[in-house]
Length: 135
Length: 122
Image 1 (cartoon, helix red, strand yellow):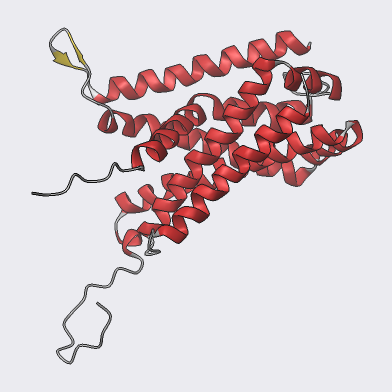
Image 2 (tube, rainbow over the protein chains, first blue to last red):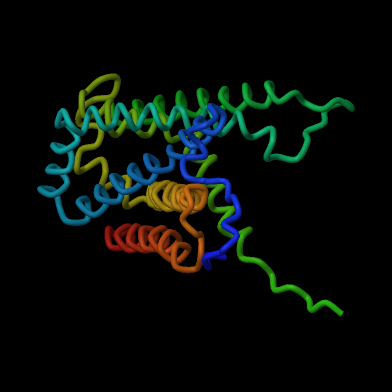
């Protein structure tokens, strides 16, 4: 493939392909939410390690979460997770098998709306359970 | 006759990606809000909600242990699968080395999470 060719045929450059079209820019942005999902998994993993190391280590992790840098970082994480949620359910009608109810295919917008509604319900349930268990 | 192709391992990783993505979509925002904003600021939830005693009890209960493991491991499998394929989109060949690096990191995080959760006892 990469041997020098005396004919020097035109090869369409691929570098920066996604920056040429807003559709692909959005694609790369929603793919990039994975970086934040991984970052949050690592934040939680460090928390688990600190929990296993004892009370002082755990309280140190809690103090670190209270620092301004950590708070700003978590606001960014929250934005990335909300965007992941929205794009995940926006793409879902294309990735799942067609859903047919009473002989009619369910519209993509309905599937997306149901997914987002499910997230709202899950969020409220988790918040209420956590509030009830810790108050 | 064409030889029977070997079974692909792609569905396993795709399944982990899908499960992690769904979990991150349904519960990710509220988890980030609780652990990263609400509890540190004492906003909505009490600031001692994640106290040592509370979290020990949570992580020692089988259900809490399971939830913590599933969240950490599946978030990581989801993210590393997506990062692998995005790197491919950016021109990095998704060959064996990159696959081992990405899935290996997810596996490492899963093993460490499982090990720590088991070390915390029941």
